[in-house]
Structures are given as structure tokens and as C-alpha cells.
Length: 255
Image (cartoon, rainbow, N blue to C red; front, side, top):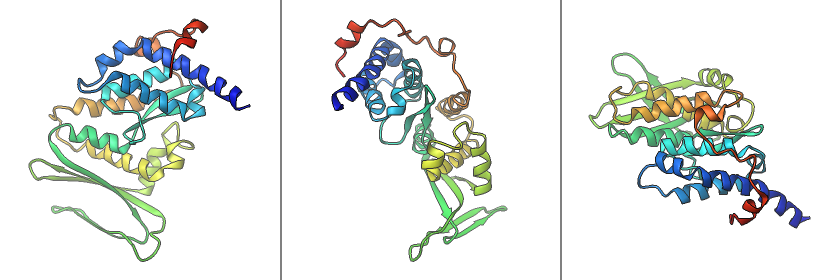
């Protein structure tokens, strides 16, 4: 039985490996110069190998998701900067809140970004007006209770602080617009998705002349596109068609 399961798993992985291999030149063009394309491909294959659901996704959708990650310079691995999420037989790129933080810091105009969730037993004070301020003391002597809000703060190189606070109602309103509102990270990692939501809103307050602002905009565009029910791969990027891959070629791939 275990041998049969292993053979069943190897075939989709081989097809995915072939697709990524034929797509190698495009990934090289998209990746930052200091990144190794073979390591990126291996990381994507390892991610798929750990998920039976991703193994059911089309190789083309996985290649497109890998390309999206490469254009942003975000690795697909366990660091949580970006990961692959299955939607039926399509894999989509999901960007973690740490991924958005990295893109913001890479702009060169932001020194640090932090995001924290607020719970009902925390001490939290949010002041607006001419001197806005956030005070947050986490409860450590008793359970923190239910999630009630989330905030993000960016410290710019000129010393200016930018911050955004969102209530649970506001976060859930954004969640309701997501294609994966009832599955995936919104159900398994709600707090992290809340942080990502508030960081994306914080990005709108940053100076528009940031050198790498286009990456933040691109990340938002990619995630918006991934809310579409289907993808015309030929229009997005010229992914190699693997429908006619020979069995002999699959057997030669060593994962």
C-alpha cells in the first residue's frame, strides 16, 4: 500500500518538476540576481510534496504561482513570506504579512514595521487627533480573550511614525470579500491574516515615491487577480504546456 501511495505521489510531482524545469529561464529573469533558481524550484517542489491538495493542482498554476513569487522576490517556504494555497485544481500565491513587511523595508524608506493583535483582556488605548498615539499592554496574568482589533506601525527613516488600527468588524469586512474567506489561512491563521490586512492598509499611507513601491502594488495586484475563479495562463505568462509530456521524460526526473 505504501509503495502504491508513493508512486501515486511521484507522478504529479514529476509533472510539476518538468513544468518548472521548462519554465526555468522565465524564473531566472524574474528572480533577484542574488537568488538561485534551482533552490527556488526545489523549495516549490518540497512545498507541493508536503501537501496532497497542492499535488492535485495543475502544474501550470503552480508554475504561475512560482513566477509571481519570483517577481516579488519572496521565497515559497516555511518562513511564511509567501506560500501556495490550493483552490480546487489551481494553486494560488498567498503573501504573508511578513512578506509585505519585507517588501516595505526593501523600499529603503522604512526602517521597521510591526503588527500586533489586540485581545479583549489587553489594555489598549488609541488616541486620534493632532497627536495620534497607540498604547498597548498585553495581558499576561490571565487569558487574553477574544480578538478585538489589530494595528500596524511603520517607522520611517526620517523618524516619522505611520500607524493604522482596524477593528474586528473592519477586518471581517475585508475577509468577506476574499475567495478563501471560509477556508485556508482565514480559518487556520486568522491573526496572521488580520496582521496582513492592516499592513496592506498601512502601505497606502507610505510615501508614493518609494523606490520599490511597485512591488507592493504588484503584490496587491497578484492577490486581487487570485480572487478570480479561473486563470488564463497563456495571457498571464507563457507557461509551458505539459499536457503532452512523455512518460519516459517523467521517469528521468529525479526529485
